[in-house]
Length: 123
Image 1: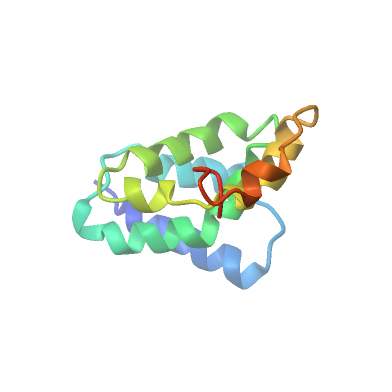
Image 2 (image 1 turned 90 degrees about the horizontal axis):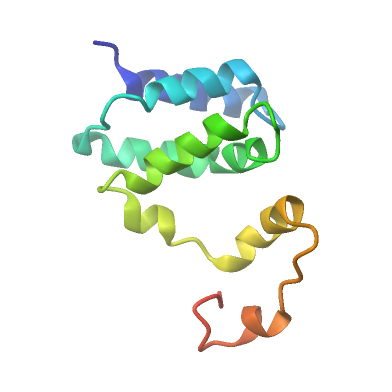
């Protein structure tokens, strides 16, 4: 059995040291391969750091027709990894606005949703 968290850490370090704008197909395929096995709850902090450092790249990959399926699977794995679910879903809505605008350009996000403190979408 291979060390999936160790391989994912290597991808994380490579991406950070290379100052990449986006992941290429090979990066995403290897990263997704690391997510096939059940994630070990003992590695929760490492996986969360990897998620935090690579989430922007995975979100960008959602906008690429060649990468979107695997990037979706990566996000799904992080969201469904019980040890991380709450942290991964604790995203502030405004940080998703650029992604929503790219994926759904015809949707207008009402400014009152972003400013209303009673709204679940407020920051």
